[in-house]
Length: 205
Image (tube, rainbow, N blue to C red; front, side, top):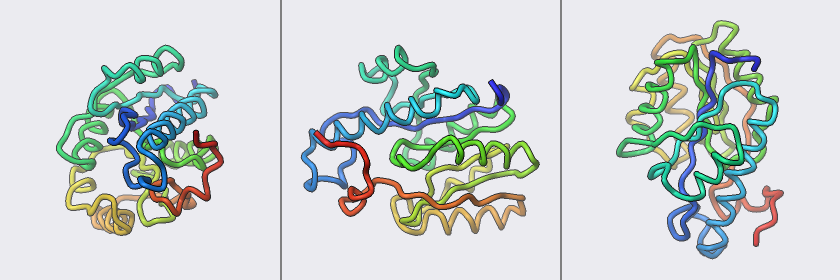
């Protein structure tokens, strides 16, 4: 592996109908939304494990015991971990904190951005290797699709209006307030709302 001292954390939720991609309902049925979630997770794992650039961890919600996650661990070279925390920010903070105990740096992504690719990941890794404290890649809707850190500052994940168009701007302000050196990558389209489905290049069954 090119970056054995780094880690890629992939956040995923068990693809249970009615509990995932709920903002795509009723444009999709609950079953279609769950099926799409499965496809997005597997596509993400396939894409980011194929080149063996760095160790990959799949952080699972509500935990790693769902049969789908066990299938993923059989199919892809990933380590399963359990997400913990009361909200997305707490879960990300806990995952980053735990991972940095045995890694030089960590990058965290979700599975909702099919546009995210190896080039984006390499740019993020190089940003951290070349001295930046953090790297972040915004989403077109005002969130972000990737964040990479060398240390975990809890304030980065607290007081954020998760799920809104303010997430990236609030996080950017916190990075500036910390006085860290950080790099912003080119924005990407994620798939959260019905209007995003036109950007999807995956067949929905």
